[in-house]
Amino acid sequence: MYYHLLSDYRTSRLLAATAAAAGTVAWIVLLRADLVLTHYDAKAHLVVARRVIDSITPGWQQIGAVWLPLPHLIQLFPTQIDYFYQTGVFGSLVSIACFGVTAYAAARLVLAITGSTAGATTAVVLLVLNPNLLYLQATPMTEPLLLAVSFMTVLWLYEWVVSGADEVPARLGWLLFAAAWTRYEAWLIIASGLVAVAYALWRRGTPVPTLVRRVWTLGRWPGGAVALFLINSRVTVGSWFVAGGFYAPDPTYAGQAAKTLVAVWWGTHQMSGYVVEVVALAVAATFLLRAVARAADAALLVPVALFAPAVLPFSAFVSGHPFRIRYMIPLVAACALFAGLSAGLLRARHAGTLVATVLAGSLAIESPLWDGSAPLIVEAQWDVPVSLNRRAVTGCLAREYRGEKILASMASLAHYMQELSPDGFDIAEFIHEGNGVIWDTALETGAAPHAGWMLVEEESEGGDVLAQAIRHDPTFAQGMTRVCEGGGVALYRRTALRQ
Image (cartoon, rainbow, N blue to C red; front, side, top):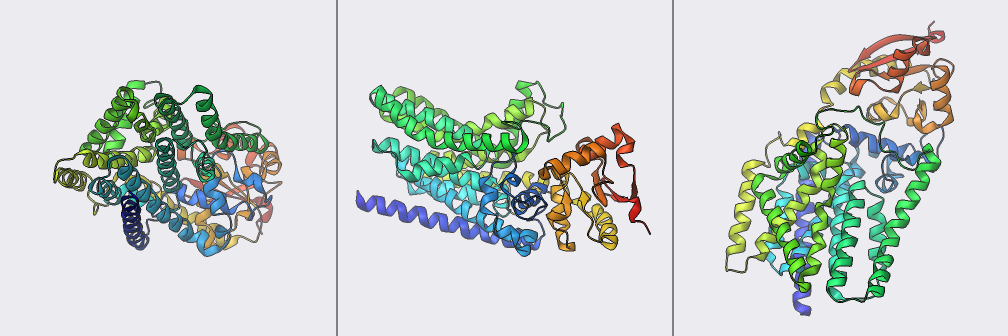
C-alpha cells in the first residue's frame, strides 16, 4: 500500500510539473502576442493590489468590498514595483503555479477514487489542452487561484472523510479560510462540500454529536473568513455585502430561468466541448446515485461540489448581470476532472486509454489549442479596440499634466489607470471611490474644487458615475473644460489651469 501511495504522489507531481511547464510556454506565447493583459479585469486586479499603498489614502480599506481580498493581498507588495505592476508578470507566475496545483489536485483525486493513472492523465491532459484555461492561467486574473484552492479543498475533504479521522488537520482549516477569501464561487463549493461531508459521515455511521462537532470544526474556518470580509465591507463602504451597482442591467436573461440555464450550459460546452461536458455530467450524476445507493460510496458526493459554482452565473444572469462566458470557467475545470474520472472508472484493459484518446480528440476538434478564437480569448479582447482609441486621451493628458489630481471612477476606469502607468501616472494621482470622504465630497460639490483633471467614461454600460452626474446636473462640470476624447473616455481640465 505504501508503494502505491508513493507512486500516486510521484504521478501527480509529474503531471503537475507538466501542466506548469505547458502553462509557462503558453504564457510566453501570449506575452509575445500582447494578450496577457488584454482583459480589463486583469488590469483592474493589479490596480486594487497596488492602491493599498499607492494612494492618496493608503491603508487596508483600499482592499475594497466587491472583490474578495486574498488575490490582492498576494500581489500587494510585488505590484508596488513598477515592472510587475505594468506587465503583470508576478501575477502571471502565481497563476501558472496555481495551474500546476490544480493539475496536481485533479490527478490525486482521480487516483484516490479510481486508482487509474490513465484517468489521472486524462484529467490533466484535458486541463492542459483547453485554450481557455491555458489563456486564463497566463494572466494575473483570480480564477486560477480559485481553481487551485477549490480543487485542493475538495481533495483534502475527500481524503479526510475516507480516512475516518476525527481531528481536522490545520492545513485543511487554513485552506478553507483561504478559499473563502478568493472568489465567491468558492463559497458555493465550500458550502456544498460541507453538506457532502456531513452526508458522508452520517451514511458511514458517525454518531450525530460527533458529526456536528466535526462539521463545526471544519465550518468555523471559512465562516470566520466570511465574517471578517463582511465586517471589512461594512467598515469600508457602509454595507455588509455589495451585490450590485457595478454593472448596467442587461435584459437578455433577466427573469428568465430556463433561458439562463441554457446559457450556462452553452457557455460551458463552448469552452469544454460537447463530448467532455456530457461525459462529465454523466459521471457526476453517477456519483450522486452511488452516494445515495451505497454507504461505502457516500464520499463520492464531495467532488460533485465542484459543480456548485453553476449557481453563481445562473443567479447573476437571471438577475440582469450581462453575460460573461468567463463565469463558467470553474465548470469547465470540473468537467475536465470528471471526464478524467470516466476514463479511470473503466476497468477493462485499454478501455481507459481509448476513452482518454476520444475525449482529448473531441476537445482538440471542438476547441483547438492553436485556435486564437477560443471564446475566453475573444471575450478578453473586447476592450482592445477601445483601448487603442484611448491613446489619444493618454497623449493629451501626458503632454499637459503638471502633477494635479485627476478625478476618475475606479469602478469604471481601473483598467485605464493601469494603462496610464507607463506614462508615469501612479494611483496616488487619482481621486477615486477608494478615497472615501474625498471622493464623496467631489461628487457633492463638483470636480473643479478638488482636481485639476477629470476622466469620464461616457459609453461603457451607459456611462460611469461621473458621466451620470454631468447628465443629471451639467453644473457638476462647472469650472472644467472638455479638452479631448477617445475610446468612450472624455478628458476635462480645470479652466484655471489654462494659460
